[in-house]
Length: 184
Image 1 (tube, one colour):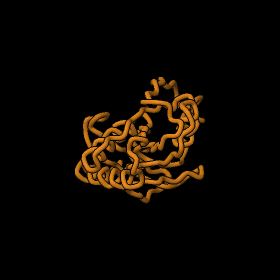
Image 2: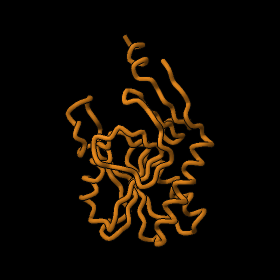
Image 3: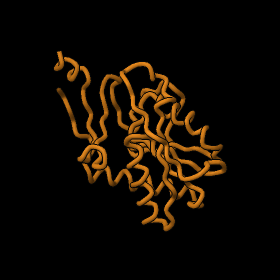
Image 4: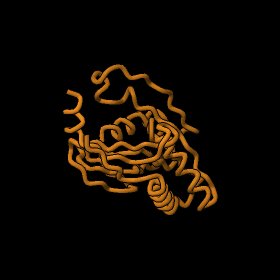
């Protein structure tokens, strides 16, 4: 199996710092900004962005957690999924929302998140922040804020490991064909 570490903990921190700066500069009214992490790894990223924005720009934006389980278009495939509760700090009507996720690939997760957001009000605007954009979209979805655009083959896997969810901090690029062959 071929696995390459693309980013280490320090590099991930630098990407998050750059994302936080870009988001804060685009949103001068931080009291109207809500960072919404898409479960699972978007949630700790949203909290980290909030902390970096608070440190560098004063006022911390609010953070919410969005579960998209019932809005996915692949709900019937891939086994049973256990939904979590979405936790948003307030009605999103009139708010500036930044959806936060770890990896943007086909765009299906973001499409589901946009649909789920409709149940929590009508935001003034919705933007997207991702740590890694790996391309290969199936939907016309692009990030407004991107930590790093990583060139990948469609069959490769990008795995983000965060200390809050995985106990370690790194981004891996895995050759899926080699991984699949090693299982046979």
